[in-house]
Length: 112
Image 1 (cartoon, rainbow, N blue to C red):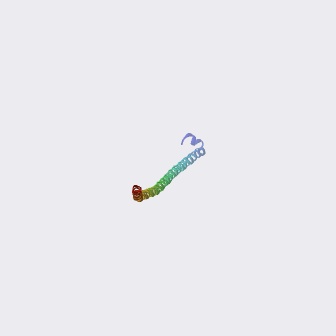
Image 2 (image 1 turned 120 degrees about the vertical axis):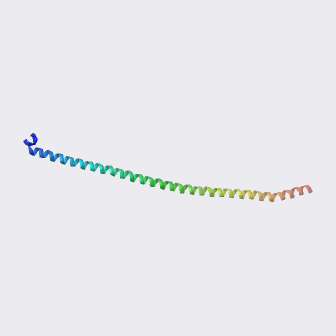
Image 3 (image 1 turned 45 degrees about the horizontal axis):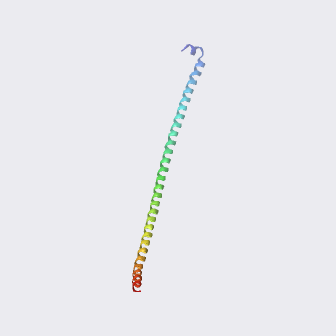
């Protein structure tokens, strides 16, 4: 027994009990801290998963939008090509119709 314990055993018992409670509090504190760290890690993981899901969905929507726009552009190109073909056809038709008329008019003017 130390000299202090011999003088006041109640005091030393109280000091030992306080130290035990303090170490229990430290363990609880460390457990609480560990829980918070784990919770933060889980939150980070959840946020990462949500971010990845949103990114994939955004890429999917962007891809669909691009495909729709590509289809619209393709349809527009087709329509423009069709309109150009119609105009060309009309021009050729007019030329075909006008050429005999011009020939007839020029031959008539020569006869007159």
